Image (cartoon, rainbow, N blue to C red):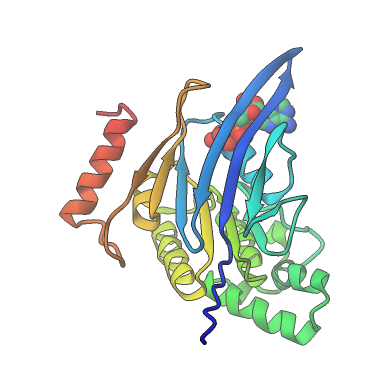
Length: 256
Ligand SMILES: Nc1ncnc2c1ncn2[C@@H]1O[C@H](COP(=O)(O)OP(=O)(O)OP(=O)(O)O)[C@@H](O)[C@H]1O
Ligand SMILES: [Mg+2]
């Protein structure tokens, strides 16, 4: 008799999630009865207008915000607070100003109690990956915005999470670095089989990286749509099918 062991890691189930905030004495309903399943190892991109609730959703998934109703399950276990199987890359880097680049990137491993030499070796690997080896002893105030953001990316990758939550991680980068980092994220995903949930304003980035694009609506209460990106990897931005997908997505946004 053979026993088939199935290991599913990084599978996310969002069940009836609602979240509202108090604003000027009124309730602002940001998420309403959201239901969504994200497969283990999937890249889901989330696009939608400013203020529609993308960051709120990521913060709930990260365990930094508590929903009003509903729940998030990771590998069938309800999420309560933050956990080491999830890492978030924020819209802005949020580095610790008193630590160097190396200290910031190794921070998650230090907190976890990993040996210093191991933590630094691993941190250096990801610092190299984001192209900042020459700056590992620099402090955050000595970095440009794009460099600081890349430190934030390295810091999240260093803990090798099962689920990587990315909130417009490349928005502050110049066009060339952005393309390089998109390729790196694609490579990291292939190598580490991490589940990625990526909020982005860049439709090309969504099509380049994602298996599925979730379009959150402008009008509150309108339904969320999901579009499968059925293109082979590695993807080619100039390929006809890629260009057609991009046009279709722009059309969905009413942009032409
Ligand atoms: N802590 C809070 N208190 C009150 N209102 C909040 C809070 N956090 C978010 N909101 C409101 O919830 C709505 C959604 O915010 P959220 O940050 O999720 O938007 P977003 O889709 O990430 O926008 P952007 O693309 O600009 O980053 C906004 O109207 C915002 O004002
Ligand atoms: Mg946001």
